[in-house]
Length: 187
Image (cartoon, rainbow, N blue to C red; front, side):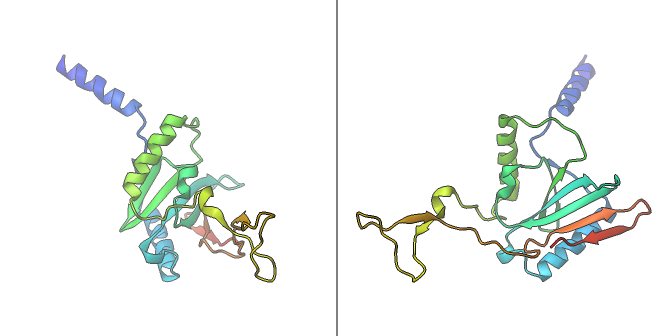
């Protein structure tokens, strides 16, 4: 009777999806990630030891496995929190495997997933700006403060800087059927 109860508990535990799950990557994939992380460190994409890597696993046009790697230094992962993560040394890698067809999580699952990731990530990322933080004083082209009819200074939403190039150190890796890889740097 006791063994049957234990088997039922094991089955129930495996049926319940954890909000976030640690996974161990194969050695060959860890080596590829370490090369990417060392390049990010060398080029200072982790300022003041802040940041994490978002790894999206998908399929390319010919059905081969594709990784999309990008460094994030703020908490934008909360917009679409992935369920899986791994760590290499002190580096946090959040993994979004879109090759696996799973139903979209409901709001309660998303909240528990975000809380789980927040505990694991800790202070590795900066807090992203809220809308209320994006207000600044409006100036004309001559540098004078723009005022409304009552003499109060006008406020505007802060504009986002748009930069060209690869400023998040984005890297796409295609895994070939023969075991080789192809690295693609988007611009």
